[in-house]
Length: 161
Image (cartoon, rainbow, N blue to C red; front, top):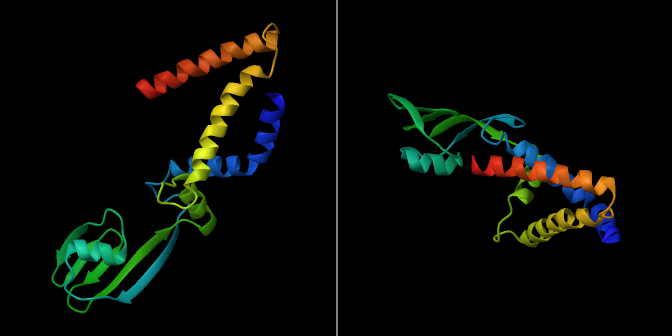
């Protein structure tokens, strides 16, 4: 058990790092933290509805804030209904962080969803195999059980509250 635990841990060190970093940064996904801001000015079709404008600009949770004459103001910019001119701020994660988060959020639509399943089972193996790292009669094992119980209680409190 120790040998499998050790070598699987070494093998997955890189992907565990990716999941750790992306998991931490995903906590801030509803903010602009880590995002690069780029000003964009372009011409699109005139007279677009609010829904169509949000789809063309590919802005999540798009909403018009106010309308003054021919100008529609939204959180990210301004759209001229008559001319189709739009200026807005695009907010994107840096390339590598974006790729890491997409890996973390992969679904069955992704060609590498199997990696998430394998990684999940590997983490379960680490949990179970850690109880076989030390002989049951040693003080290290007994202290480990106390920490495991404390961690279980904390987890249940977080999940259930």
